[in-house]
Image (cartoon, rainbow, N blue to C red; front, side, top):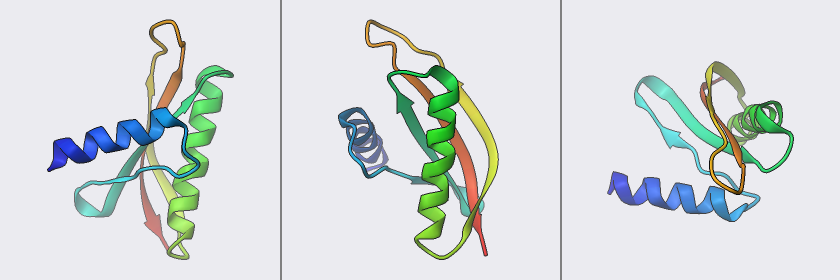
Length: 90
């Protein structure tokens, strides 16, 4: 089931949907990955931060960023990606 969720998450992100997938982690933490075709690391990082904020705002909370992970661009598409680990706090 987790593998299916991971595949679904990847497909949503690659498709460029306006919605984003957040995976729940232990201890109330979450992770999401944002991708940017242009602008490189800075754009994908900003997008990841914004998406974490939007996710937490849905429950009237604020995102508390734990860390970012840069996933280097690869292949002909040169899509840059940043993964953000965060929690939501009132």
